[in-house]
Length: 283
Image 1 (cartoon, helix red, strand yellow):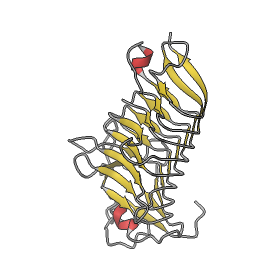
Image 2 (cartoon, one colour; image 1 turned 180 degrees about the vertical axis):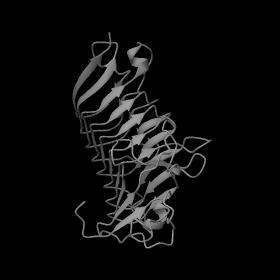
Image 3 (cartoon, helix red, strand yellow; image 1 turned 120 degrees about the vertical axis):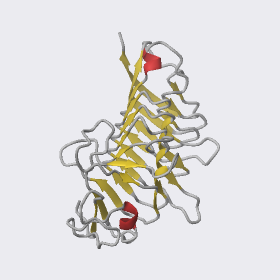
Image 4 (cartoon, helix red, strand yellow; image 1 turned 90 degrees about the vertical axis):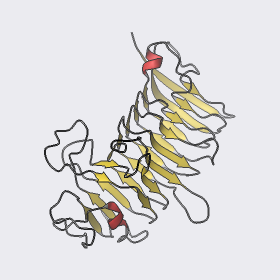
C-alpha cells in the first residue's frame, strides 16, 4: 500500500500486544482493531494491518490460536482494515464478540475491508459478518470496498447493506452462509450503484437478496446451489432484484439441472434489465 498515512499493527497473539501501545511498531502491536481505530485520522489513508492467526475451525490450531473476536464499529472515514496472510487465501479469523452479533459495522465513508476469514460467534448464533449502513445524518457507511474475504458456514448473513451506495464487493467466497450471502432488507432502505464482481457463492441459503437495488452491476459471479443441481425447489436462492431497476446482470454462472435459467434461480422484476447468464450444467 502506497499511503501517506500511518500503518497500525494489530496482533493479539503477540507477546507484546497491548491496547495502549502506539501500534506503529510491529514488535509492539495493538491487541484489538477497536484500539487501532481510535488512533486513525479521517481520510489520512491510514491502514490497519491485522496479523495472521490460526483460529480457523479446520486449521491445525497449534499456534497463534487467538482470533479477532470483536464487534467493531467503524466511524472513521477513509481507513483500510487489511488481514495479512503471508502464503494463503483464507486470512485472519474475525468473529463477532456477542451471540448473534456483528463482527464489523461500517458507519464511515470510504472504508476498505480486505483479506479476512469471517466466522460466526463461537458457541452460539452465527451472526452477521459486515453491516454497512447510512442514515443521512450521522452515519455514512457507503463507498465501502469489501475484497478478498471468505465468509464461513458458521456465518448467518455475510454482508448486509442498509441504504449504502457505491459499494464494491469483489473476489469474495461465501461458503454455505445460513441466511444470506449479500442482503438488502426489503423493509428498510434500498441500496444503489453497487459493484458485485467475481465472487463465489457455495450453497448459501440465498446468494444475493437485492430487493429494491437500483443502478448496479452484478458481473462474473459463480453461484453453486445444491437444490438447483438436484432439480429441487430453489426459489429466489440465486439473485433476487425484485422492485429494482436499471441493473446490469451479466456473465454470471449458475449450477443448474436445467438447460436455461429459470426464476427458481434468479428473480429480477425490473423496468430495465440486461441479462447474460452462463450455466454450469450438471450431468
